[in-house]
Picture 1 (cartoon, rainbow, N blue to C red):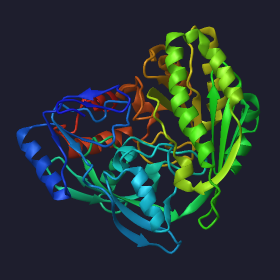
Picture 2: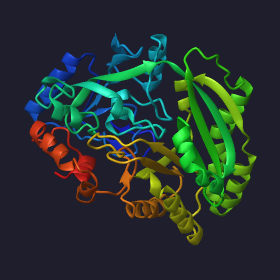
Picture 3: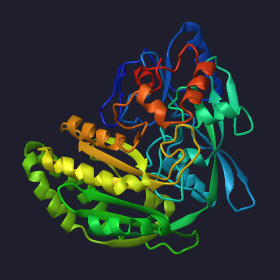
Picture 4: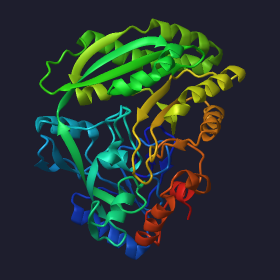
Length: 438
């Protein structure tokens, strides 16, 4: 952030707002928004800037929620978990540490923990696990500042339509200030990571999805090799057996960040070397096994900058969809250095969830930020659309309201709530016009 220009983490979006604000209370935010309404100015909230789309871009007031952080309240329940109310600007990493001190943990998490909670929630962040949903499925209540500056509380029984639209709403309805989520007793994760063949992984996919709590894999294009990750939940008092610090530095810092950055710089200058690099990299991987706090296992450091697109497809369509992507890569002259990430989620009922109504597989494709991505992403998007794929709301895609509407049964209900609460489109921007219409 400079005085005049905001940029997201990936460098794919910039904004030059008229004003940048960091309110220190809900009341200050309310006054800011009511003032913007009188002046006819646009307002957008921004978290850590980890969305690849222009969801936070505005020509009006860009509101950071960095001063609205921390846990507001913890209400234990009979199961040993609790309902926890978190201020919207809280970074996931900080929230997870604080929850652990209360003997609690989030039900499921994604693999990046630097986002603000509201930002991750509003763009549909999810983790992996065929029996688990994304962040929005864990939400039990919201507090939202509406376009007139009023502060509304909502839940499944209080302002239910606002709740349904707000818990995954891309900031199109209002600015979230507090989120109440259901948490469970803290738990450890036993992680087993191993290089395997793509064919063997797909052959036992149904078994691994159904028996492993949190299963995912990374496929290296131009090869038939993958890295699998199998994470199993254990009681919170299970002794930790973390990765040795030296091994962690070599694997997670040196290889995954420093060396990977260097490899991608070389690949940018000589793309023809990428298939050989992928074959070498995939075979150089070694297995590792460890046990640690759940949130530490879920998250990984990502310092190599990239562009990303992710599609949610019916879980049963995964093998053929990967095969189609492989065929396109092999018959094109396009080379792909980043692994393709594959994760899973249970069907849910969140209006704009990419897993709404169906068990889901996620295919995430990446490209180094210095390389051209358009042909690759366009091809994967076309392949995913053939099986009614849905794009991640916070990652790059070319979809519009007209072709998104048929895949979401509650799309028009969401638009109606948006029309009701923000008819003047205070929270509008080009990206929201693209995906929801004007």
